[in-house]
Amino acid sequence: PRGIMKIRFYEEDAPGTVENFVKLAKEGFYDGLAFHRVIPDFVIQGGCPYSKDLSDPRVGTGGPGYQIKCELSGGNQYHDRGVVSMAHAGRDTGGSQFFICHSRTNTKHLDRKHTCFGKVFEGFNVIDKIRQGDRIDKIIINED
Image 1 (spheres, rainbow, N blue to C red):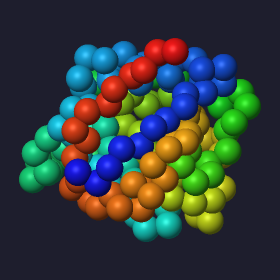
Image 2: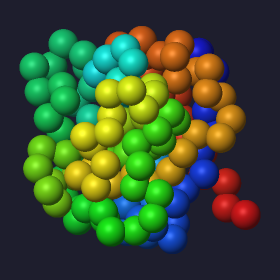
Image 3: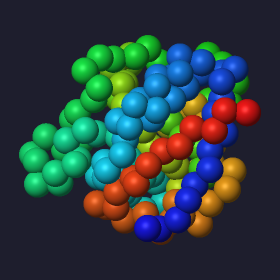
């Protein structure tokens, strides 16, 4: 494994998005899925259920079977290094796919278009180690 990333959620700014991600994580939805899209100095993206089999031509198009609303009006809607945000195919079409930003360099255009719902606070170096096809072993939710 490449390492562990710890994320703090933006529960105040994106409550529905956080709730959805936590629910999917607790159900084990993300276990074994790949980071199917890795673009240097931009993002690492995962959460597509079809990525269990990377030869599936549908990789990158899947979701949980429903869509969630974008939450773009809260604070913290700023795509900086380590920010976790929802991927989508147009407004209010997100579900399970998410991305983590490498840096601010190429992400400014995503602000207020994709819902930022958390940020890595430990394991920044892991973001840079992730390669396309690397798998998520498990997402563990710690409630404090």
